[in-house]
Image 1 (cartoon, rainbow, N blue to C red):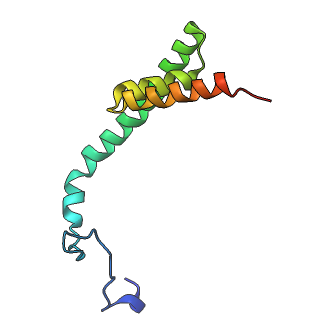
Image 2: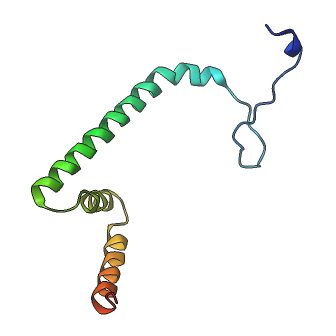
Image 3: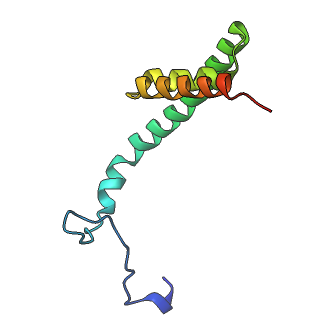
Length: 101
């Protein structure tokens, strides 16, 4: 142990509760959950790579840009599909009506 820090305690800032008071940190809870958290993180990384590969394959097969397919899938998977569709319809109107110089 480093003698310069002996007898002193680190102040670690935690989350704040409803009353805006710092909560007491509980590292033992993280220790209990770390194995499953690491497994989930690795699975999310793998799923992200698989999703990217699937979007790329769909783009190559369909002739659409991968970015357009990805945005469409994300909109369909989310709760804001109608909002995204409306935004794109307005954009298309601007492209058609205003165009470029």
